[in-house]
Length: 499
Ligand code: ADP
Ligand code: MG
Ligand code: MG
Image: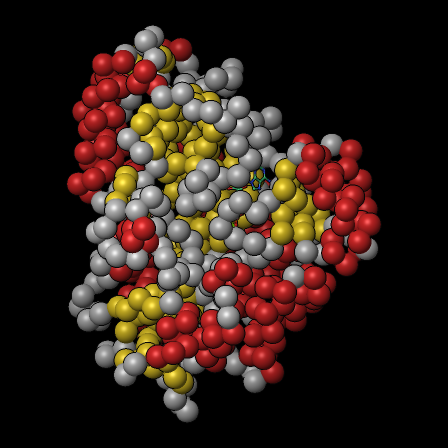
């Protein structure tokens, strides 16, 4: 069951958080007993540290916590100790980052590939349809983006049976937690500095995390390329945002020498206050915008009226640098992920055979639902698959028996409906014992993890200004939970302990 037992009320002592439950876990000598007393000290220290260092989110029980900074804060859910992760797979995931950066850029330039790949999805998925409409209008007016900025996060799970690292998805819009992930790494290093001896763990095995400063650097460099020193960075946000401190931690470290300010607006506010001048300049009020950084706009909920669509369209037409552009956004859809996994497609976008091999190696089984073999296999063994619509933000996928039921229902409706989904091989990471902290309570759980590696890409015409791997995010969740989002309430923030 999903019920979580508070560890602090248990009378017996328990073994180390990251000791794997299966046989592939750390050697016995690496495990140490964590006494109730030690756990109590670490928990208290970690909670204080979180509060003092801004490892916080808005508390959903407090009404204004999503709109007024400083009101109704609670520590972000986090794992008390870092999750073990093999050094070799860590290197593999990091090496992939610049290759995926380049891949997204190349795919984004092939308007026909994006349109063709998503044409069937468009018919049955109104949201993807609207995005695609904006994209086709840009193709019509031959809009080009000379300066292109991507802030991505590629997510992976390590498959228990094959010991292979598989990509779960590639986020090209609103990749979250560059700020809080750095704080969790710091918290873990700090705890191990204090308690590492007792635990048999060394804080140096938790890799430093520079996601927040590297993302800020990419935004600042993009701002510099735009070349208007009085223009601002516009952060597009949701009207209510409990993850605002992650966003603020990024925008408050923008190097001040580059620009004086950044502003936050919802899409509705951009529609109300914004205009595009005939030379392409985007104004919000009387401020010219150099860079638009989307932390909203990835879900249909972000477009409750035509006003939001009008704002998105105006932004896209303008000369401001969009992070992401509509093409970068579409290149990160699950449908495109599945199309890229087809034979001979990667070769069209990547020049180096070596890069193609590296990327292909991390692709799990992916099928469109007009693939008879894939659907048949999923009907027979639905527990081995995940059914995914073209959605972001967690909580949208279909698992287990629901896969079979949904497939059967969609097939009845006719094959058109199937085009809204892709089918993916389900990955099963090894479960480990972990201490998950929520609202001040420590829960001991059997947990699995998903590693995200951030990437930043910036180019101006032929010049690649930045193509970097930019730190990481580990998310850990109860092994019995299907979904994984932190904001969606399934997972906690974590870091890694290299083995
Ligand atoms: P989203 O864009 O909503 O985050 P994801 O593809 O990342 O969509 O799926 C959400 C969560 O579902 C992931 O964080 C992961 O926990 C789980 N998940 C997705 N795909 C798989 C898979 N192939 N195998 C196992 N779990 C998966
Ligand atoms: Mg996503
Ligand atoms: Mg995801």
